[in-house]
Length: 635
Image (cartoon, rainbow, N blue to C red; front, side):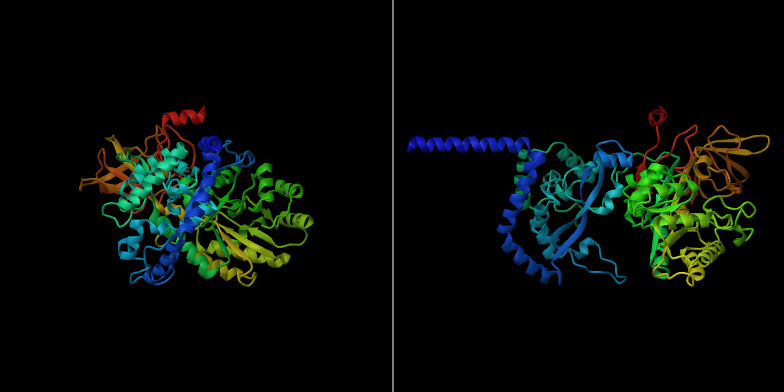
């Protein structure tokens, strides 16, 4: 009998050893998730009495729903080989973070000020909430998240979705694994350490996930809970907001600064105007205006679509997180490959060339969102509103030239009589409200002439935005609606607007410094480290909105401000009777966000850095292009 028990004991020891070895070897790829399921289910059973008690207590203390579900970024997956090929990115590239809903017990009330805004955290965090946080009991409902697989027991803590545009590429690797209920950063300071330290711990964990490390973190977490340490940051009720990767060095000119406040204001004006005047609408951003990746990601987070006019812009928008059904594909230079992708996908596709009529016959698919760009008759415009009164516009199918009827017949031949979209963007010289009245009148004429069933009207862009004394989104949308309301049902027909400059133009400054001042026989020349390439790459502007930062109060009769290039005509502006400039003084150019920081090539000096200012701090979102960067790009 004794020998039999010894045999059973040895078998058990061997089995447990094999199990532990397999668990250790296959932990990251299999057993980590296995233990998450088993342990979370066990914990839910054990803590079920606490769940019931805290649910009732929370409903009383919070005077309402005791639970709190917030969207957080979860794990991002590697793209498949096919997805990488479709997006034109290297194999092994990660996709976007999956947004999850994290369930917790509510620890803060919904107390608001007289303006209806939520009060600061310290005023909403009551005694009951402090108790839940200090004991980590607020995390118990998150066990459901672990059980269903949206988070893990151990991993980087899921942060706010609004932080996504602020991460650099290294920091985003924290999302290569499932977020965790606890993690390495939590047992090394929790909310009492800096963001830089948190990311350091998170990335260290992502690189080295092991069974024994997770066991150690879980035991350390239990100790932290009983000690109630690291709950808040000094001077904060919880943890200060993440502002992005701060550049610890002084800013070296030239550099751009994006005002997040002005950017948000420009977006909200359009959203409000569309919401009030034409609710069935789409606000899309013209990517060509400024294709800075940070900006595209930010606008995606704000709910905007991406309007693109090339394969490159299409793929860039996808890389910045825009889904196919959030991309509007315009322009006459679509490749056959990307055209096929857009047809088979859910992108809004506006045909703009005879070539594309042949493509649609070849790759028609089951395309629901399809439109034609119309070549608007310039006779509908006043002479001051357009520079193309005599020769007409370049783009779209002309009704007067017979192209529009041919295009309509092609669509009907392929799909049968169906609803169709109309794209009518036109460049204008004045950006006046009258321009959009003229466009809308022409659209109404085309609709009546061909008795069209119109699914959407893509009015294009070219608006003013954020400029005092100029038309705003309400002025434009009001004029468009006035001309179209008798030709379409605004509840059925979608209105698409594609502002670019009106979104980003007024939100950007360029900071430059004076490098040299010299007097010649003719004039005083002020050379700066900025250039017209930075603020006027088309060399058309005659004036700028600017401010000077100089200690001098005396003025000078005439100062010619020049750029750094070796071209003598790199003369930016003439200052008359302005304060005298000296070396080291700054000239700041305002409202320079359109067709600047990502427009054109690099010449003599390379692209300057870009910062985002949220009103409290500035964060670098593009580094200065170095010689090494340039060499790699051009080699």
